[in-house]
Image (cartoon, rainbow, N blue to C red; front, side, top):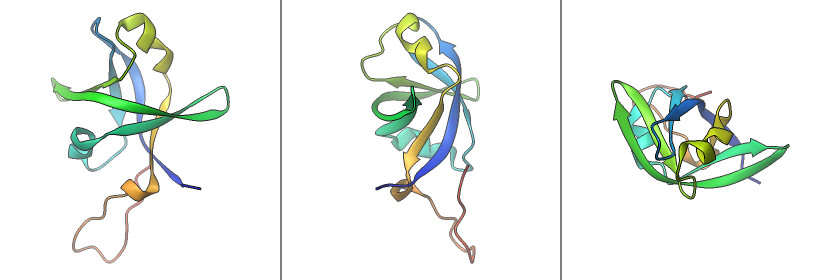
Length: 102
């Protein structure tokens, strides 16, 4: 069973195409450009979602979840925490310890 790391929280829907504006908890902002999937909890069950696109908009990170193609569909994510599997942990080179980003 995989452990999970909290990387962001969904703040709002961005535009009409299903993009989500997120608050990053990560020190590695570029990690979002490489995201392939994220996890979110719905009704006590952790679900996996495919990340379709990631972009920056005025220093904000916006991302699109596959299959959520309009603002109404995407609004179910507002307030949800986004997680990645611990295998996606990133380490700061030169530090004598591993950072857990939460």
